[in-house]
Length: 240
Image (cartoon, rainbow, N blue to C red; front, side):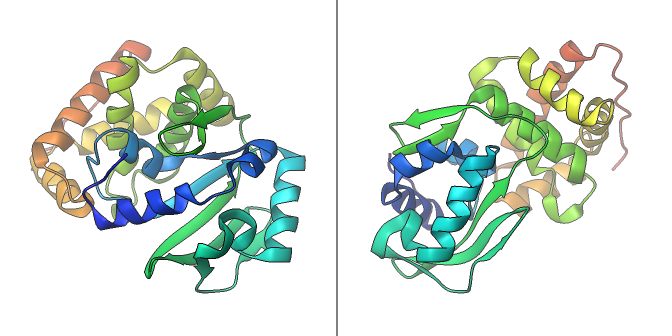
């Protein structure tokens, strides 16, 4: 795949040199916003390279490998770490460089839900399955939709995932609500209320380097899908 944005070309280059076999063995999956953005036409800017691992043995093996060999354990010699890896119970994090460009890298240890994925030939690495991409974004939106720095990106990403499925998969709803309960629909109502404001749509578009019309369309798709999944959902309109 080819990409227009330099940040996305850099991330694609990094994916291309990763040890896919080791990632598959560890059940570690390319995920979060960047995976959605690169698979759906670069609708927004995403600067991070994020993976998820929910397997105890797999995460232990990832930790051991990175402690022993650093970035080379995952990427080989073409990627360097610009700062020491931070490794703890929550994840593995660093700032990496590829072809002179810095990228924030993270493997998150997912403890809330189980995960599935498979090798995606477009990226050359295992990618989180569609249902679990939805579940992760529902959880992320519940955690942070009120954070102005996040700029409603999880809602936008959900809107673009809906281009592939049309509806929020039942399996994703079950996983997310098992973890967070009624906070999932409550947060969807909250973020959709925010995005009912034209001023908020403008702010989100500016923060995410998107067209305002694309933000509005994503919000519209998410609203329709959310109301289908939760017919009693109350979305309060906001005045500008």
